[in-house]
Length: 171
Image 1: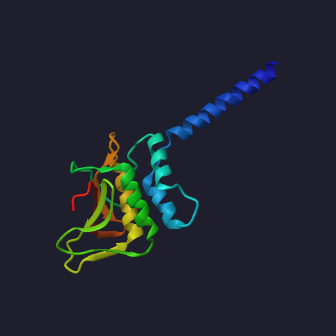
Image 2: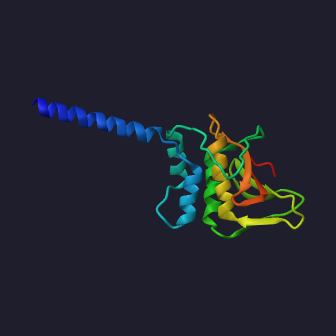
Image 3: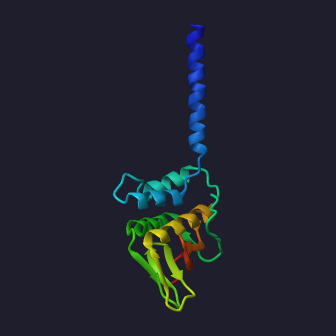
């Protein structure tokens, strides 16, 4: 009887530790985006499920060594709508997203979220839409606010000539 009780208590303690570890992991939108890009028709989370999982996890800024992300006080996008834009752009794969010189180019508007790009190159600049989505994932990971809004800017992955902005629709 003592052996059974000890085994049961040890099992419960192990289960509690495992559950705690799962709960404390931070969800990363950048990682989610990478999974879509790696296998667009694969079995990955829907935008709605990604949003729910992110809401259930602890929100902590995830370090990103390769690019700068800044979070501003401009009108903020709805997080759930921003996730839809990321999904749309990631699903376009290697399709070109081109930013023209002299103004903002809109890549996605969904509900209360908009993704625009700007460049200082006279000839404009292009990146794959999936590289734009990667940059948006970094913005989501760094700039998500407690009121479930997000606003920030970064660059398209691998293209320092394309600044991408995520905010409430402004154009």
